Image (cartoon, rainbow, N blue to C red):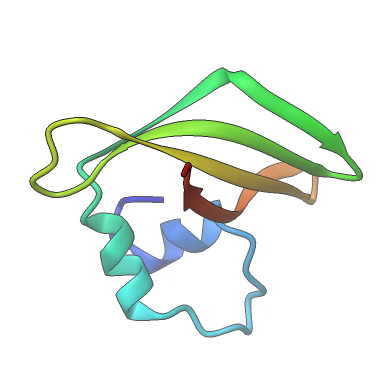
Length: 87
């Protein structure tokens, strides 16, 4: 997801093949210095939806920020549907 390669980002996020993927989104994800998912926090919400906590280090950051990552199943794989910093 943080590779900077549009094809690899598309493989990790829930986006339709025909849907344009904003180049700024791809480069913004690539700027992330580290993203670590805490699989112990994975919560299956049912109906192919889950949430997991990730620790994210942004450029120039020294301490990881905590994000909530929402996942959906697409063809039996969990894909990222949205992310947001924990308030």
